[in-house]
Length: 223
Image (cartoon, rainbow, N blue to C red; front, side):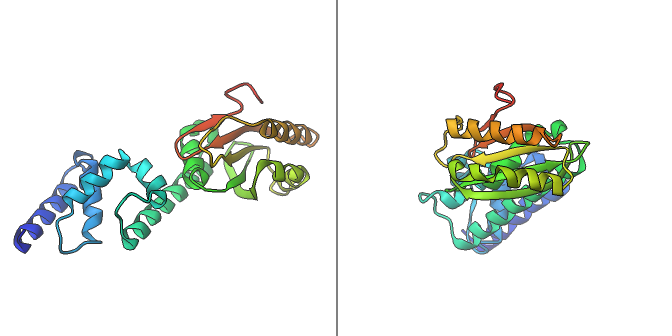
């Protein structure tokens, strides 16, 4: 493929993106434009199509690309995709700080999945909310297993009071990919809920996430 054709093709795609609605572009074309900056002198349309075919959508791509050994992707592209993932995670967090979490529940689930759903170790997070259900603070309580985290109930109450939280949401991931809560998950949830009641702080929910699933204790009648 000639350099003139390659330059012309790339310029046409850029013009299509800049001068028309970006939604008119296919997902692979958006990815192809990113690849321009990683592979400046080769045609990347086929590579972009192969990657999008494998992951199906951008959410799956950003969540899984660094954990899939079967995809041919270089370090610079991996770094770029992880950068975009971090931008997405932070923008989702901004939404929760600006508006009530209960009005943006899908954003909350996406944020939790993006931030810890793909971790190979279990991570336990707490979202502290104000009287308007806006996010005050997002804090990692511990890493490890839910059984090890059970001893931190007093710390949950202490931090909730420190941040002047009116309510909290517990979040942890299951690296196994199975969102179903264990008995240990249920026990620690009940323990924290009971402890918070003594200081008039509400436990709104406990979410268990993987990279593509989310289990809500509240939705299943466990809170």
